[in-house]
Image (cartoon, rainbow, N blue to C red):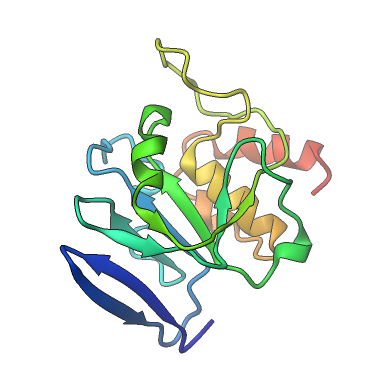
Length: 171
């Protein structure tokens, strides 16, 4: 996707990001209240193949032809390769807000059902059974799309347990 323009708007202005060099494999749209000390994607912030945006008021991203992970959508497959991944980063109660920051027509896909290795502590019961830690979802989606890079999980405390679960799925 080198040389591709990514349109977005911020505070009424329209802008375009020009991709140069390493192709962007995923765009991460983070909720402004995300606790960065607990965020499993924060150690990846400087990775060249990832771009991070904060979903502040007025920010929108055109997700046309991007893969947006959604519970209940058709399962992601290698046939979806070639499309950039758009990952919403925040807890489950923020999903609806994050969706309001998306324009265009994303391609809705879900991940195969796999249990998270992340120990959940959600007292509100908002986490779906299919819910993964953001870094788990990122790794698994990119692996399915043909970009298998376990270094994405290098700083993830539950890395080995999650990789064991992935191997059990025969990916």
